[in-house]
Image 1 (spheres, rainbow, N blue to C red):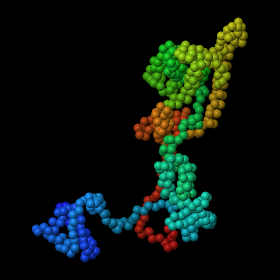
Image 2 (image 1 turned 120 degrees about the vertical axis):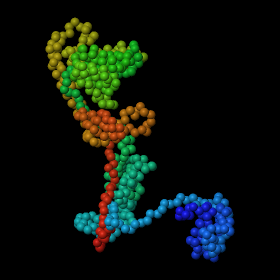
Image 3 (image 1 turned 180 degrees about the horizontal axis):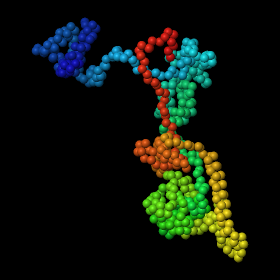
Image 4 (image 1 turned 60 degrees about the horizontal axis):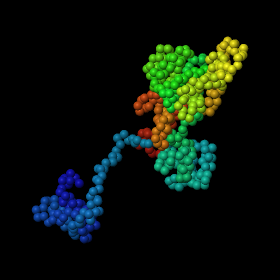
Length: 539
């Protein structure tokens, strides 16, 4: 309806519809009985109105040509007409302009499918222009495996089942459906490939494309592969230092309360493996500062470096002030990577195991037995050193209760203090050789991982065991590498929050991005150039 007709009353609009239909189908309706059902009772009386408008008079003159009867019918019974009247009106059609000012068309050009030459040869027995003799022989040899059934080319596969040849532009969508769609299960590349082949589809690089597609699937990368020892970074042992130069510090506990104590604060010398430890009631910064001043600095001198984790009792203002005052370098382990402070972690485990064997069933006398456990540890032989920590520190074996019963200890012990430097040099060499052997063995068992700035990686969620729900992804990210440090640490940046943080390379793996499927090139082609030469074969 035009703008004037839209202003008609409801009765006039219904009469207009009748007039339009009768005029449209006039050749078919003349001479026939016509019954019009309407739910608008006033329509019958409008035709008998004595003072009708000129518009109604024209309509009545048109209706007099037909044998027409108008009957009343409720809208619920006249459902077909009622439904048609409620159909949403379509938008106005846009006229087609056949004129192009610059005589140019935007043309999308794609490379021909991989089976173009085979298709042309099977269908028309024609070789591509400028084809070499070897290529012609190959087409002729492969032709027995292909069947042309317009509009598709089929290939006889090794299982004697024909498969439809798929062009490159459809590969990505097919792999997406058979790998990621509901019911596909995000299986590996082999199962995905077999599923595609079982459905009768084929292209030459199907195994390679499926492997690439699965390896770049975001959900698969975050769900598969837990962290193992094979994913660790190469070891970086501390080799060039002397006794008491480098200490590792850590807290143990909480344990069952013993004489008011719940924690153990432990430090270990990285060269001699000498351990100092005390039982503490709290694990705060004041306890750490007092322990370092009274038990380490005053007894063994100021160290060159102190290694700890990122706990708040080690990373605080009081601790930083103490270490700065004495010129001690504070080395902080990366988060969730206790191997950085490996010596402290090893002797934590050893002291804990010793106390477990020495305590009574209630486990509440461990604070009284801590000194005995340290004594046992200091006098035990250490394979990396070739001697005990006590011997490398004091230059002689420790007097134990068993040999105090003898009057004569031996003349050789008088000269052991003179041999202290040689003992330590021997211990250094033994430790160096042992660490190199361990590093060589360790590095042979791991995967070689090399990271570069700008790469995207996934971060292993080591706190997942603390979170309810087994269906959560074990990997977060992706994150961007902003810096790579020489000893296995990597700095990452969250692209959403722009926050940076450091982790160990053991906890990350490369994120494989999908660089996109097959692309098309867009170029302008003049209409005057669309006339092909005679004999051109289109594919």
